[in-house]
Length: 306
Image (cartoon, one colour):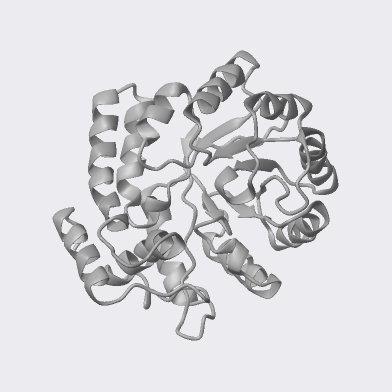
């Protein structure tokens, strides 16, 4: 079994861009330092919120280099090495390892789709050829494959996987995963990516969360984790309810969908709060403007963040 364990709050870090789409290092540093100061337990770079699939190899290298430098061993650095097939994943993994990542996060292959045998071998190859802990990223909406709990437990027992980041939306599978992980001796660190039901995930036995909204409000997620650790479920629910009010930054926009309305809302909120210089998005995604920005401002004001 992998001896790398992580729990608590591990936000998927949003990437700050300049008008020319280059990395805005000053804003990136603002964001990272703010989350570490809030007490997060790790940071996940180059995930879905971190624009991994929009990023060239050169941009991925820049993001990892600056992330490792800024974090400076204060918390573990998890890096997404997400790509279509195994060989490309390994190329990204070798770079992440060379640049100082503490662990890597890997989806199932998502172009030449195979069965569970090929998916299992994909994770085994990555774990065997990289000298880093491997986390499985379960996000079927993007990769078109659901990672079943039985396979995750099997790969945890083998020492292939150190953990699972679950963004599947499959509550039944997640509950089974947490229960079977406990019965199996806890080979996996199980993290939920569903930021609006994190308190429920903790009650099910999750080891932590990977909430995108923590880019905007990390303090509430840290307080919720501490309350859950203390068994204070009323406080955990209260913190989750307050964060859910903030999550309306996603649904007050009009005329946008998908990435523009999700990560775009994060970036707009961070710009309004003075953490990011711009809310620039990767091409061809359009940034939020006009009434959409003002609607997000109103949510931030109502939640006490402006």
